Length: 372
Image 1: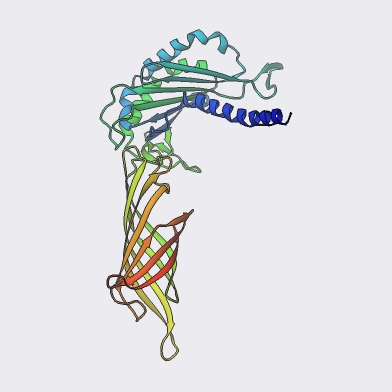
Image 2: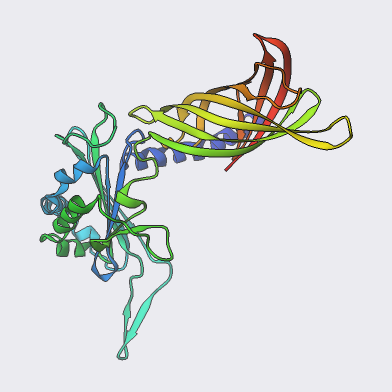
């Protein structure tokens, strides 16, 4: 009996995990693979509260979906066998339509019953009301993509992703007569023009056509190309011998990533004035500033294909050299070597070693920095 109980307990613990894994695999079959990077994203506001979201691997891929009417006609024809099962006017529907690299089409249809009964009363007549929009999710691969404008993978296929949010999925036919093709042409011709900030929000709209918007100017997604130069500033505290030494760092760091945005390299250069406070022979307090020029280097994995996020794993070190000496606290030709770094949000902890004249006068220390 005890053995049977143990077996049942194991089954109870394992089955939910198996179910969760199967659901996850089903979802992945109707999503863009996780190793594919979406570089551009646009939103097109249509009439009656409907909307289209366009996601692309590269901005040049707009050329291949300029014939969007033809793409949608193929989609509508492929959906005809399911017409009767989609007849309920009150359910909210999600239709996933994915064309894989072998040209096979996968279709998933989900319908959701409304929570509770919803009605509208008009001129004394009561009728049922649908309150949730339908979602049409279309994913395809570009078989002959144009030359990319950004540094993207040379081996991975190029994807387009169209997401329609419609009051009723049948309204898709209303936008298959040149309306969407014109919107795509407007994006193509004006993507590099002005994208003012939407008042009261964080998104931007295309000045040429205010119905077109993006999370960032030019439709860039947060990761962009993965390569960028940024200025940084931090305040630091460290110990040197028996002194408590505050400092700050001002400089620039260059981030370079591979095409698949899985690995990055980060060299940097910083000016770092250190401040020591001590009394002179007359007992008067003085501030002594000693400046270091510091070179940093880090390399490691990228989190979520976004090179602006912290390393997923890394090797980091820094070398500083005393370029301005004030007082007799630091020896001439002093170096500071930092090896490794622990980062907690925007706070870093770095073990360091001070030495001079080729590893003489070695002094260990701990350096804590707050980034801004």
